[in-house]
Image 1 (cartoon, rainbow, N blue to C red):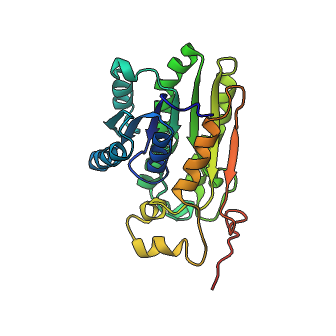
Image 2: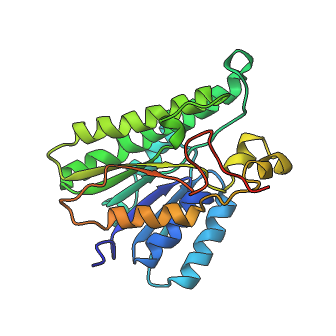
Length: 258
């Protein structure tokens, strides 16, 4: 049964990676889309591609940095009337910066991760959740990470932010209890997207080494599971999912073929 058809899905960080993959999967199920990201050119290209494949769905793009609370509140609180009743929020915007010991950490990297991975998630959720609670229906999917479950060397602040995202998923589930709003936490392992490229500030060769000799997850793998989770009957909440490539046992144990 398709419970997603003709709903409205808001995806943050929609211009690439897991967010972009979610846009295609939810569009294929007939959901109308609000696509939010910083890179407007990429958003518009994605919108065009989606509309060519799925002409029956409506798409609204919003250029916004989730770190900017006034902008988030202003843009999402003043949506056109036909877009106000958001059924699903996918808090996907997030990033990692650098791999340094904490005593060598770069403050700018820390602030960017904390502001995006924690505060950005909170800003968007704070704006969207009240409407879901008032309507007594909705889904919030927070994209955290295996790094929120297991700290790994040099991961320090990134791991802390993803642990916070996971904790916030648990806290949201408690706070909205009785409203029929479902909160789902997704913890991916190694997924080959722009993640490592962003972590290493555009160093493509270093990013490529992260996945050398193993088959990582793809963004489509994660999006497919998110779509499945949202499509469960209203009385079913898949609250917490850890998704790993078969070659990965935990954050540091990865089988690589030589």
